[in-house]
Amino acid sequence: MLIKHALIFTGYTTNIPMNATAIALLSIFSYLSSTLLIIRNKGQSRYKKTSIFLGWVGVLSHIAFIGLSFHQSIGFNFGFFSTSSLVAMIVALLLSIASFNKPVEILGVAIFPTAASMLALELKFPENTQILSQYNWEMSAHILTSIVAFSLLNIAALQALLLAFQDQQLKSHPPKRFIQSLPPLQTMESLLFQMLTTGIIFLTISLTTGFLFIEDLFAQHLVHKTVLSLLAWIIFTGLLVGRRLYGWRGMTAIKWTLLGFLSLLLAYFGSKLVLELILHRAS
Image 1: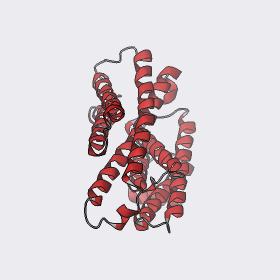
Image 2: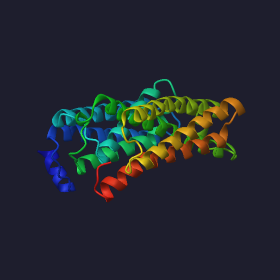
Image 3: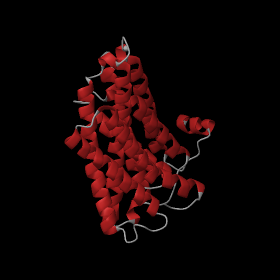
């Protein structure tokens, strides 16, 4: 009852069951608490374990919410806000897994608030279209690999931004304590290319399944998405080839990574934003 009154007070009206709503609010609170601890940590280890634990609480609660919503609708909703929430959850999950053996928890400063925001928007604007059960397994495989690819390359883009900031700060004298606490540039760069490689594998699978299983891939409402996704694949693949053959690194790698991710961002969320929220058509 308290949650219900809180939602009414804040302007939230939703058809989502109250137990799922309570789980979603727990996830949002955990994400934001983890973010505050990461910010407060400033390179020290005092709050690191607690921030990672709260991040996991946020992720697992987010997964539980999506699972309950899936069960309620007998399928997954691929509307704009629901898909944004799913992508944010996968990004947060991948970050949480990576934080076990890689120094990437600082990325939670950007990822966790984004996941909390997308989940809050899903609560605020529930949608009832484009459920997964409407698609055959081939199309479902294409959709899911696309989401995983975008999630992985999202983390790579954030890693590239952090790498650029670290490179800029190390050139100042003296660099901030936070920057000094990060792993060496070479390690950070190695992490970037590991993420890129894994993301490109899933992007390749996504494009391949699209060409094999979508009858009219270059239909009017898909042509921009197809072209931009192919452009992103070319950029990312070109970066990996350039690194192997010519030793590309540093700002060159950062610029190519951000350019490729921008193309992918426009391919998916740009088209969904225009078609669903502006033109009110299914993408």
